[in-house]
Amino acid sequence: MLSSPLPNPLRVLLAVVLLPLAAHAYFQVTSPSKGVQWANNQTYPISWSKGLFDGVDTFDLELSRLGTDGLVFVAKDVPSYTGTLNVALQNVPPADDYFLLFLNSTHGVMYGNSQQFSIAATGTNNASAPQPDGSKPTVTVSGGPNPTAVFATTFPPSSNGAFGWMAVSGTMAHVVALTSVATIGLMSGAWMVL
Ligand SMILES: *[C@@H]1O[C@H](CO)[C@@H](O)[C@H](O)[C@H]1NC(C)=O
Ligand SMILES: *[C@@H]1O[C@H](CO)[C@@H](O)[C@H](O)[C@H]1NC(C)=O
Ligand SMILES: *[C@@H]1O[C@H](CO)[C@@H](O)[C@H](O)[C@H]1NC(C)=O
Image (cartoon, rainbow, N blue to C red; front, side, top):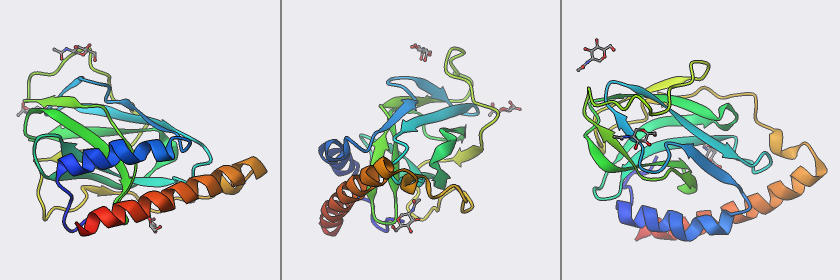
């Protein structure tokens, strides 16, 4: 976990500047989509699609805001093959500048981020917002950023770990992905000490 999270503008900059380096390590967040409005006391799907052979078997999920410092730790060690994770919102401060970060919080490597979206007060839910997927795990997020908070949910180790090493072409992709992850890790390490 990051003991002193970067200010959000830096994190965003980091994501924007460094993600293209990992462009071949495909990771796309499909929900929440840009500008969608979520509401407290409701459950929504977080969905992503990613390259099979990128070596990203698990990730940590954090909720962040563009205009305000602080992170909400959503879930740790999310198995990436599930593709969707539902999140139940409780007492999250309403704002329109939220985004989700998909990363390894141990060394700060960012895999992807959602588009900006809003979270509104209880009772203002948008009936046409995407519905949760009942076949996927649900985590609960309660309250706003809290520097002393820990991840609300930690997923147990999964046996679905070795995907990237299966095929010969997959091995090549894995090596390339690891190289770029290592590069990003070094660079974000440099950011960490700032
Ligand atoms: C949240 O939802 C539950 C069940 O859907 C409901 O009983 C409760 O009153 C709601 N809470 C608020 C603050 O609206
Ligand atoms: C983050 O990276 C460390 C070291 O490579 C690894 O042990 C850990 O499992 C990773 N965490 C996640 C959520 O993938
Ligand atoms: C409701 O959700 C739909 C689909 O995500 C979106 O197009 C629309 O703008 C939303 N309306 C409001 C008021 O958030």
